[in-house]
Structure formats: C-alpha cells, structure tokens
Image: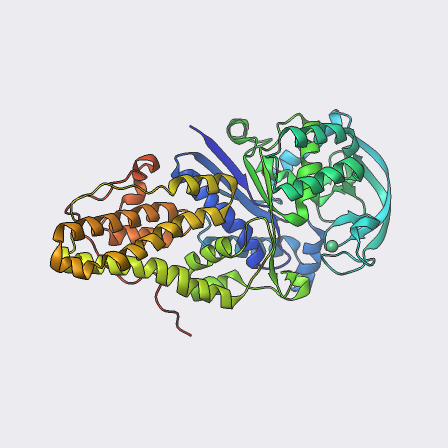
Amino acid sequence: MKKFYLTTPIYYVNAMPHVGHAYTTTVADVLARYHRLKGETVFFLTGTDENSQNNLKAAEKHGYKDLNLYLDDMAAKWRQTFGDLDITFDRFIRTTEADHKKGVEKFWRRVAATGDIYAGEYEGWYCDGCEGFKTEADLVEGKCPLHKTAPRRLKEKNYFFKLTKYRQALLDHIDAHPEFIMPEGRRNEVRSYVASFMEDVSISRQTVTVGIPVPDDPSSVIYVWFDALINYLTGIGYGTDDAKFAEFWPADLHLVGKDIIKFHCALWPAMLMSAGLPLPTQVFAHGFLLTGGDKMSKSLGNVVDPAELAKKYGNDPLRYFMLREVPFGSDGDFSVERIEERYGGDLANEFGNLLHRVLAMTEKYFDGKVPAAVDGQVPEWAAYEKGMATLDFAMVLDAVWTILREANKLIDTEKPWELAKTDRARLAGLLYSLLERLRQVGWMLLPILPTSAKKLFVQLGLPDEDKRPYDQAKVWGGLKEGGILKKGEPLFPRLTP
Ligand SMILES: [Zn+2]
C-alpha cells in the first residue's frame, strides 16, 4: 500500500497559535485527509519546537518558575487548538520528549562520525526572534525584516557543520529534481543562496541554557534549528523505532512558510546527506496571510485567533476561506469581511442553497425518494485530482464550484417547476442528475469541508457514504433509485451579527 508522510513546521510555544499557524496546519490536514481517502497509509506530523531560549523569556513573563510546566501548559493549548480545528494529526511531537532527544543525539553522532562537525569561533549578527544568524544581506536598514529589531553581535565557541561541503551535491539535487522545491520562485531563491552565499553553519550555543546538550560536551547545547529539523525523523521513530522509520521515511512533503525555506532546502538536505539518509520528495513553501500588509506575528500585535474565527463561522468555512482566498504559495490578505463574503456567496448560496432546493423539489415531486438513475458524468475529477497533487487549491475548488454553478444553471434553464406539469420523466432525470452531482461534490469536499460533506451525505440518505472506497465512490451512479432523502438544516445558516 502506498504511504504518504507529510509534516508541518513545529511551532514555537512562546505564544498561542494564530491564523498563520492554523493556515499551514489546515492545508496539511486537507492533504492528509485526501491521501487517506485514496486509501494510502498516511502519517501526518505536527507539534511544538520547545528547545528555544525564547520560551524561557515567555515563561518568566507569564510568571512560571519552572520552564517545563510552562511548556506542558502551552503544548497542551496548541494541541487543543488544533483538535478544536479538526486537525487529524497522527502525532503531535514535542522536542522536549525523550525519544526526540535520543534521536537527535544519534543523528549528531552520525554526522560527527562522517567528519562534518568541527569546533570554531563564531562572530556575527544574531536575531533573537528568529534564533538565527543574519548576514548583512539579510538585514533591511540594519534590522531583521521579520522582527523589525536590530540583531545583536554574538561571539562564542561553537561547533560548525560543514554545510559548504554539500554545495555541489545540493545544486545537483535541486537541478535534477525540480519538484524538490516548490513553488518555482522559491527554487530559484534557494539555488542562488546555495550557489553564492551559503556558508558553514554554527550548530551549537554556549551562551544559551535551553536545549539538548551536545553529546560529549555538556557545556554547549545544540542549536535549536539543528535540533528542530530532526523532528521530521524522530517523529516517525528515528533512533527508537526502526521499523516505523523505515516505513515512512523519506517524507513525501514538508509544508513550510516561505521564511524558513533555506533551513529546509539547504541545511536540512545537507544534514541528511551527511547522515546518509534519503532526502524528502518535496518542500512546498506557502506565502503569508497578511493583515494590513504585514505577516501576522505576535511582536507586531496584528494576530487573529483561529479558535475565535472557528467559533463564529465554523471550522469548515474557515478552512474553505484559507484555501480559496489566497493562491497557495503567494501572500494574501486576511480579513473578516472577505470571510463573510465567501460564506454568504460561495458556501451558503452556491452550495448550501443548491442542496436545499434540490432536496425540497425531490420531496415535493417524488416523496423524497431518489428517482430512477440516468447516465451522466462529472469530468471535473481530473482537474480536482491534479490540483490536489500539485497543491493548487484554486484548481481544486474551481473544479468543485464548476459543478455547483452548472447545477444551479441547470435549474434555472430546465425550470423543474414547469417540468412537473409537462414532463415527469425529464424532471426525474434532472433531479437524479442534480442529486448525483451533489454526492460527487460531497466526495470532493470530504478533505476540505469534512463536517459539511458528511452532513450532505446524511441528507442524501447515505450516512455511511464516506466509508466506501474512493475509487468506487467517484463512479457516476452511487445514488440508488428509491433511496430515502433526509432534508435537514441548511449547511450554512445565515450568520448572526
Ligand atoms: Zn528576526
């Protein structure tokens, strides 16, 4: 059976999740559900990056004397938020967990044995917010463009990873595997960084107290990024469960924000090469949800709480909005006004209302029973599947909404209320065709709007529809004559102000 292993970045727990975090994780969830639907063995990993000095500051600020208590509380809140958002992760990893530490130590020793770690002295600019070194070229007017703060000068004894040793191998891999870095614009950015700017990287800290100690040198801790990237291995058993690791590695997809693409497409593959492990198939970098032209971030004070949005609009509409509003890979503006427009137009009107009308007419003209089947087909499956395979969610949703819009148009042109008086056979065929299209739409929307799709199946009288094999379910004619429909509440009720 085919496997599909996908990951989100692991998140810093010095603040609560905002819509930007929910965005990455929701996209991952849509893909995880889609691949499960197709019968693949999916492993979906997300979690929290806890070995960060920033967490110590946050713990102190919130009055915690014990960092571990703070981390436990925050990790629980993140986990809860993702649970509330219907995120179906297979593991929520925390980098303070024992199996992760064990795997990181194993990895470090493996890379050291290759001869790729050496001791040296580092001096350079360091952004505390990013927990990363910055070159002059990274700075805008002397400041970190993301945190809008000036980096500080740092000088200490560090262990270095021989990143430059892998320059040519990385370039060769990028050129031979165009699918490795997506979208294409990011590939060019990473390629030029690897070719012209990449230097050896410091992978330990002396002045930092939080983190996993360097094996055989407890005076230093492992740099948080070096430790964090390894979660993609330890999350599936590297160092602790060889069989599971062999089943799922290499990852099929790392989803990342565009700000961390270099870590994932230069440092990470070089680390894997050094450790003698195969590289992930694809790293896909998405854009940011912007508010007022800036990336959402705690330090800029422009964050939106996804739990509150979900409470007001529901999980499905929030998921829909995130996939629909912003072309995946680009930046896009986030606003409550646009959510409400999408809710009222695309969801309530074009989708929910269509279902309601078709069920009401079948109730009225055929006692709420599915009329005899007629031939038909939904050609949009090809575009839908291509969109899912290439993470082109605009293509996916266009395919679905093409079916919905055509169905709405069909009602306007065929005028079933007139056919009821003149041509019962044609009316029966029309309603069967509309109901069957809705069933197929339900399948397409299962990964995206899981709650609404299941409600739709219930209303079509098929409560166990989502348990059928995908390949059979896609075939026209799933609705059987005489099936009893069960018109219920509108899928997307009017919003209360
Ligand atoms: Zn920064």
